[in-house]
Length: 95
Image (cartoon, rainbow, N blue to C red; front, side, top):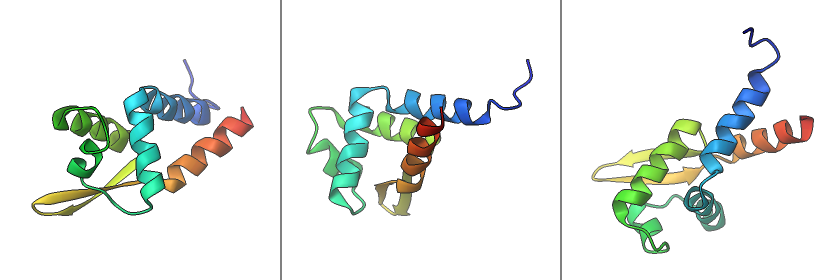
């Protein structure tokens, strides 16, 4: 099956799938609301989830390109990628 013309719908589906879990949507919302990078621990403090669960959700969001990470050993700082969210808004509007 040719994928010509499917790049945008495939990207939309990938981003929507990453946001499809309530915990991941909440993590992105929290990161956007803070307007500053947060550690996984700071997110855990705001969620009724274990650190390992939040870490796993952050990984999904990173792979989808919705969250970026800045390594500052021994910690990592997470930020929502506003550009990816704007891309999603534009792509959804174009469907």
